Length: 211
Image (cartoon, rainbow, N blue to C red):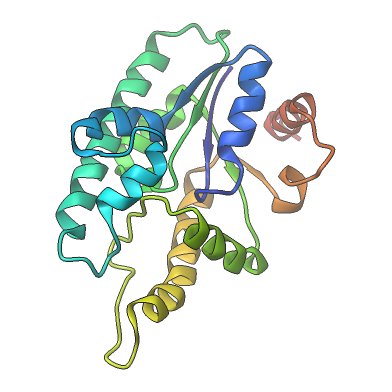
C-alpha cells in the first residue's frame, strides 16, 4: 500500500503519517527532505520548518520570489526521487508520503506519475477553518508558495494584504487538491478526537472499494 497525504500545511498530514509510521509504514516527510537540500542556506538547526519559513520570507520581501522558486525546484526533485522509490517498491510494501501544502505546484506530469504509484488522500478543510489555518501560520510560520495569489493594495499594510489574500490561496489550492486526489476525507472525519490509525486506514479502504 502506497499512500500520499495532500492538503494545506498544518491540517494534520504529518500527524496521520506519523500514526501510520507507528503501524509499520515507511515514512517520508517532504518538508524534511526539502530542508536537507536547503540545509547550507538555513541557519536554524532546531526547527527546520521555521528555518525554511525565515529563509523564504513573506511574499512582499524582495528576496521572496527567487527563494520560492528555488524551494519549488527542490520540491520537484524530492517528488521525482520519491516517485522513483515508489516505482521500485513492491505494491505490498507499506509506504506513506507526507507532502507539503505546495505539492500541487510541482506540475501535472509529476502529479500524474505520483497518482500512478500511490493513492492520493486529500485531508479536506471547510471555509470555517480558513481563519484557524491563518492563525496557525502566524503562530508557527511555514514556507508558503503563493503562486501570484498575493497582491497588496495601496491602502493595505503587508499584514492586511496577507490576511486578505490567504483565503483566496486556500480556495485555489482546495480545487487542485480535489482535482488530483483519489480519496477525500472530510475535515470533520479526519479531525475526530477518537479516530485511530486503524480507523483512518479503514476509511481509505472503504473509499477505495467500488460501489
